[in-house]
Image (tube, rainbow, N blue to C red; front, side, top):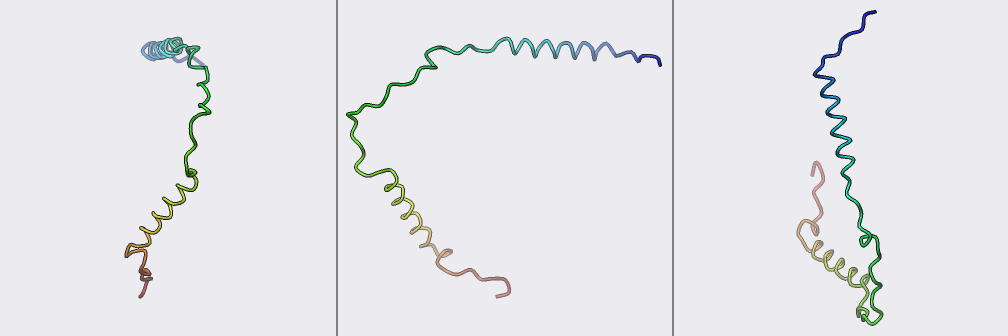
Length: 83
């Protein structure tokens, strides 16, 4: 069986693609040492909130539910099919 010649444009294209990929991989930014350090711990003198986050979130959710249930769409039963 006789080998089929590969068009030279395909060879050039594949070679340029391979070279461009290796060139991009070689230009990786280096990490700075200061970006790997941990931030300082929080101050112990910072006052705690008067109400916990969970309780304040629960109050916001309850108020949102009351507003949603107060709308006409939620207060009236939906008409089913064939009614």
